[in-house]
Amino acid sequence: MKSGFTILILFGLLMLGIALISAVKEENSSLYKPHPMKLEIPKGWPNPPQNIFEKNELTLEGFILGKRLFYDGNLSKDGQISCASCHQQFAAFATFDHDLSHGVANTLTTRNAPGLFNLAWKTEMHWDGGINHLEVQPLSPMTAPNEMGETLENIVAKVKKDTAYARLFKAAFGSTKVNMQRILRALAQFTGSIVSANSKYDKVMRGEETFTAYELKGYHLFKEKCAGCHTEPLFTDNSYRNNGMPLNRFKDIGRQAITLNPKDSLKFIVPSLRNAQLTFPYMHDGSIYSIPQVIEHYRSKLNKDDPNLDPLLKNGIPLTLLEKNQLTYFIYTLTDSSLTKNKKYAPDNGIIMQQTFDSH
Amino acid sequence: MLKQKQAEEKYREMNKFSYFLLSLALIFLNSLCFAQQTGKLMVSFNQEANGREIVVRDSTYSNPFGETYTIKKLKYYTGQWNFNNRIIDLYTLINAASEENHVEFDLPPGKYREFSFLLGVDSASNCSGAQEGALDPMNDMFWTWNSGYIMFKLEGNSQESTADLNRIEWHIGGYKGPLNATRRITFNEPFEIIAGKTTQMEIVLNLDKVWDGKNKIKISEDPMCMTMGALAQKIADNFQGMFSIKTISLLP
Image 1 (cartoon, each protein chain N blue to C red):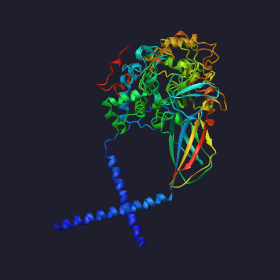
Image 2: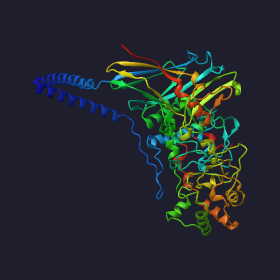
Image 3: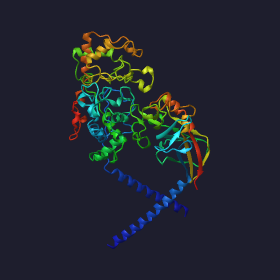
Image 4: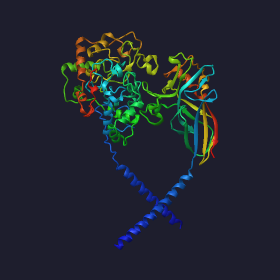
């Protein structure tokens, strides 16, 4: 009798198992089947310091949603300023020819907009490194009164109201639910997978092209005099350094505002030299207009009296005028037209925002 | 034809039988679960000043230095609960403007001699990207220019404040090293969890102690604290003193 009862229970458990399996099958047959995407890690590059897509699986659908949000001016208070307003693809996602960028209602930022590429290799964002994860980076421009000037509540409400998004959220995340986490994760999927690794320099390294004599001289000079901070292949070591720029009119003390450590006064993150030809003007406040002028800053103008000046710069960077020229030509080889012209990163048909191409 | 009908009949019988077996199995599984039954702990938070419950945008209170003030916002994070070294990684945003400031836990039955929670958000959760629920940046408790959570937020007004429009604005945050503004709040009050029953606990935050605790902080001197650093640390050092347990009772 007792063994009969056990058999009954085992049979019941089996039935339960079958019921569960068929329920799971049902789930899988629903429409949510995003296409996984892989972050492209160029040959010879280090792995990213952390996997920014660990909790936010990179998919084609998430990337497409993120791109749409990136180009959507509606996220700003006046409907005019999208992420792409200040991060223009033809300028390697910096603001072309602007020292400072424009925010809502004729406001101006206080720092130069950096180019957006190879962000998966960065652990901290902003010139002062105040942002600790790519996903939370957009919160800053979204809410800053001199950038997009909007509240997070309004952004979620506007995205919910725009019916075109429902389909994209469902495709990317499995349901039409709109919340800040999904908006930020989709944006991170787009911006975090922008990779720039196909400049002339890269082609030379891969043996597909050769430097001109001038460029080659410049490359040797670069390795000798600049690579201490602008380390290959990312052309930055992502450290914070005081490069002898004076305190500007905004009293921008840089990294010190984040760490509260006086030794971090006027330290800013070392920017990548990739695509530098397109991201002028330069420095954290866009106060130096051209590459030769930046080199001249290091050659003769930096503030050697600043006790926090980076030790690598204590004698400036001695260069002859010819060498300055050669170095400039080398930096031009870091321009990657396959980034600036890549349709993958361009707005999809029908959602091109006029302000994206508005030169202000 | 008849044969098919018979087969159908039989199939239906079998179906009935398997449903019967299924329910037997469920009863069996249920009894297994009962063997490891837990009890509930329901912790509710109340905020008081001058011995009265705090009502935001309403009453006037005075601090121990005789400075009167009103409260617009009082919000703080609780999380990383520790019951007999069982860490429960659950964050809750307590908001004096809300009626629903309680947290529920399922705990193994037994005696608990002390427990603690983290006032604030631990460092890992400060740098894990975009989150939802209590840690959603929409809750207005996240710094957008220097990533990290505001652990404790007090906003209001006082004639004693020298700041713009006589405001008081304390946004206490920071999670790195010496700037860490989280504090572990520890209670040495024993309580018991009984299987299948709910123990209810009322924790009270007494705001009087935020001004006059380990450190003395006056509105006239420090109406604003918007960044991490020394003042935020001074205020955070008063956190433990604010909390006490009002009642512990077993619900019938």
